[in-house]
Image (cartoon, rainbow, N blue to C red; front, side, top):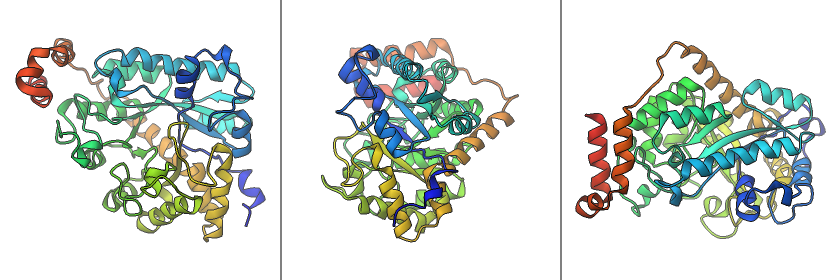
Length: 383
């Protein structure tokens, strides 16, 4: 059956993760005067598709590749934050920049797409809490702790495949400071892309619920980017959310997938951990292959119809569409408000400089290897 006609009226449709800003960089070098989002044709996302998909809110990813680490990751990330702001300013009748749960509700009531920023990868911080705080001031409201590379303070998902070594056994001592500072700021902690050890450590450490901005169920597709059942249960216990990724490789562990395969992930997560921890992750404009029936953001209503056909209630679908993520964001803000009098986390500037310098020191890498250098640096920071 088609979605209930009234379902869309009181519901914020909020797919969590969209890489349109990366397309603006890779195709147009962030020159918005050379692109019209009303007619942009070779992306998963444009203004007509946003309207057809009825997107009431969207986290835009400020992503830069791992090869920027130890180079110009901070500058490039700031440029991505900038292009998101400029995109909202260029199309004020469509987008409203948002940085709080109340902003999202305000944009929804104005019939605009609330536009939020998430930074995809801890390498964008260059191991600096000052950079983290500055990005928060610029409107960043979630940080994915890693992309597909380790940072000097946290392990990524490739560790679980054996293709990269564990450098920190999860989080380093500095990584734990990052978690505490994100709680204090009111920034959502995103565990997509991290190792399973990091997932469990953060779920223990964080005072606020966490998100998986674009990850699916490991039991349905055993890809290390997906979330195991025991972690799903812990997300339920801590009132977080897992936003289902639509990328074929994470849906069926193959090059092809159908809309019904994505719905299987929703069903499994609901069965294991309940409908209150589920969201729409998407990953539009960040992946090369998407399921039949979910080819771009305009197709989101197709998944709504499929879930309703499978017996999901209107309230469960509304929760997955956006209300669950809105709840998590509100709870993160409450934790921030309780941390008002908590001291700001700082780190020794000299050691931070050494941290970056050592990674550029070829003699250290030659003598100890990258893992050895990382462990030496972690020891120095703790000392």
